[in-house]
Image (tube, rainbow, N blue to C red; front, side):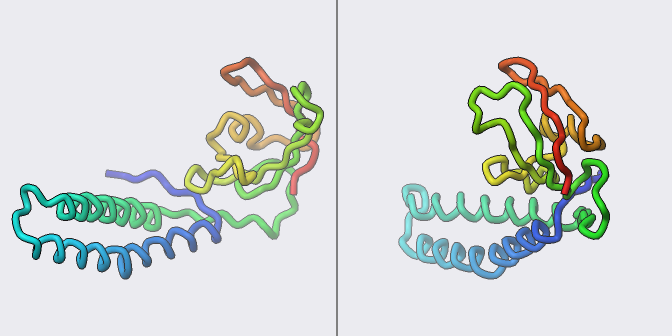
Amino acid sequence: MTSKETILTAEGLAKLEAELEELRTVKRLENEERLHEAIAHGDLSENSEYVSAKDEQARIEGRILELEQMVNTAKVIDNTKKRKTKVELGATVDIEDLAPEFEEDRLQSYTVVGTTEADPFAGRISNESPIGAAIMGKKVGAVVTVRTPVGDHQYKIVKIK
């Protein structure tokens, strides 16, 4: 089975590696203690602590597998040294909504990242999101149309950093 690349910034990869280490060395061991304590209480068929610990163990192991997969397929984007002439992964882009509902929504700034690191509320959009996909590869001054559930929106690329 061929895995899809996980596109990350160096900072994003470090966060995933730290979470993986925390799960392997701390959370897994803490939950094993909970499991042993629950088993010591006897009858497992009606032991809610045991069921809870088993569920947590499954969640932890699943997340460890997910993180290992992401780290193993990570492609780190680093274009900090390049002069930005077009929108690409890792670029911070200032866009202007050409028909904002409110005047304060007119100018927006986003950093384009892979889906793993996307957090629109923190100004980090995925290259696969509607806005991210529309602006990828475009230059300053380009106007793009983004289809949304409430209708089409037009954005103008003002600056690429």
